[in-house]
Length: 106
Image 1 (tube, rainbow, N blue to C red):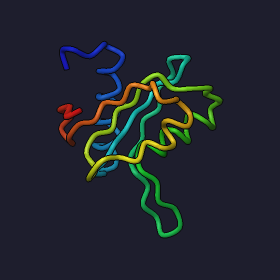
Image 2: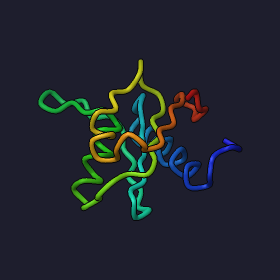
Image 3: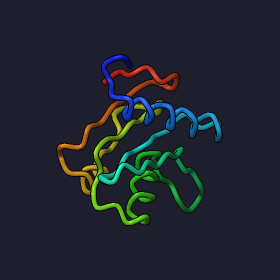
Image 4: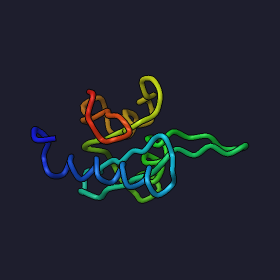
């Protein structure tokens, strides 16, 4: 994490906290263009299924965010679907991927 800005390190901490709070295998956090952060775990209900990143994007949109600067996704299986993230944040949004312990892999 030494190469990350303190703001991106905060996203890792928030994503890990969301995972710990819920016991979920996946957590995420995003930062909007105003510097506000949103953290969440995946939602898996019978009638609603969202990845942690999708929940974060939904939280940002419902709070009035006009775009995103950065995102972190920890845990989970396979490559994440970044469609919603890029729809709000654009192709240039910084995305960090890591394992459930918070070690970045990409």
